[in-house]
Length: 255
Ligand SMILES: [Zn+2]
Image 1 (cartoon, rainbow, N blue to C red):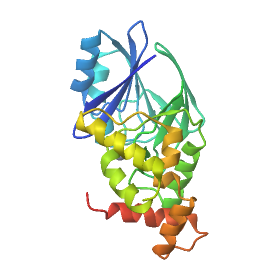
Image 2: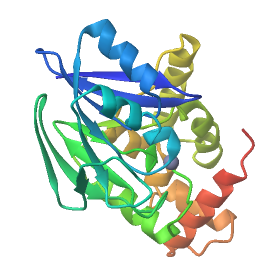
Image 3: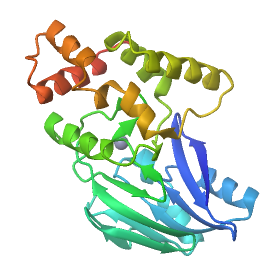
Image 4: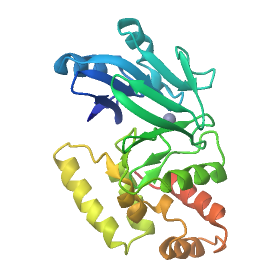
């Protein structure tokens, strides 16, 4: 299996998986042209579209792609998503034959209420729930829901490759450094991220174990984040309160 990150729109990635026979699947195709160019360049046949949530920058290319290709479109049960012919939810398994792929569907509410993630073959397609060094904004769910979703993703195998839907790592890193300033793993990751972005290369996918060591939103129980909570008047045993405060602080962080 081959994995490609297709840059799209301002800072999205459309993830493309294909096998050696040229059969392809894409995740969250917000822009049909980007996908068409990638398919043409590599002579791939698009068979599957996987959608994580209803935001336009994730589904905007679906209508055109489904007219041009014989695709199955998998999406959560949400009337705000048109054009899906396969509706999926928590606990479902997406079994693809071309390319051969078995993906577990995980409900991960928070960024939106019907948001799902797809996990399988060592990959996690998590849409806007988890970003490298950050997490999605709370548009519809509660802090408790998003934290539970992130806890769930954190429990996946450490060698999982996390395929996030935006290139936000450098900006997230500036906030992470503020709240977890003595973390040597974070310092290493920031050095790497700066070098990658200097060359206009993606900072993704990233291994989950690395995120667990560096992403403040996955480190809410670690002493550095408990200390951050205490500095910000969040009671030390209230992890949801600390998470909500951290998410709120990020919302107001410059840049
Ligand atoms: Zn979104």
